Amino acid sequence: QKEVEQNSGPLSVPEGAIASLNCTYSDRGSQSFFWYRQYSGKSPELIMFIYSNGDKEDGRFTAQLNKASQYVSLLIRDSQPSDSATYLCAVDRNQGGKLIFGQGTELSVKP
Amino acid sequence: DTEVTQTPKHLVMGMTNKKSLKCEQHMGHRAMYWYKQKAKKPPELMFVYSYEKLSINESVPSRFSPECPNSSLLNLHLHALQPEDSALYLCASSQGQRDEKLFFGSGTQLSVL
Image 1: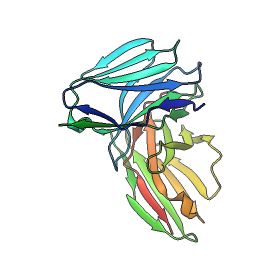
Image 2: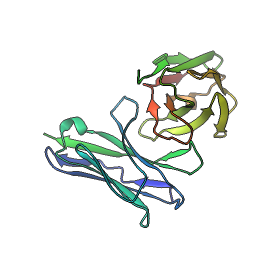
Image 3: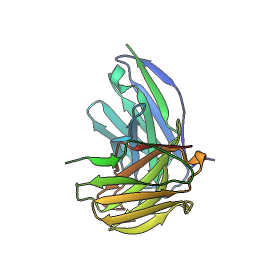
């Protein structure tokens, strides 16, 4: 079992829809969870982080964390073509500095 | 200044060459990282420096040699690389090693011939 698993996609949604990206992790000791966005040919950019169970909202983005079920998700409301990118879920190993990245989910938002 | 600057952006080298990748940040961050990323794959951690000291080496081959001359600079010295080392090399920084909100540089696309 991979430490951090994501559906590779591609996930295709129409413009204006909600995109839902999911991630599961295996280490119950993980405390910090991150979502990075990576456009093709560019470097990853942090868009959300969450430490506590529940929802965290920032603009059109909502991160959801359920530690009991060991999953974290990212919702993108009112999806725009500019949201088309690969979204990387990252989880700490509770060892300071060791983030484990999932394989990434490629999102395509169609006009 | 919220940027991590990497040079060069592109590098082509032969297997017998010696080259260096450079990374600079002026955000006052005390942790700096080297990641390697192959196409369509996630970034893989190589090294972590915390307060200018090497704290994590993810069993990286010795042909990769990191250096942190001061709190703003991070280098990666390359020697006798193999074609399979061709990848995007990403530098990142964070406020501290326990703060994993990483700021990535734009990367160096390395090709080893």
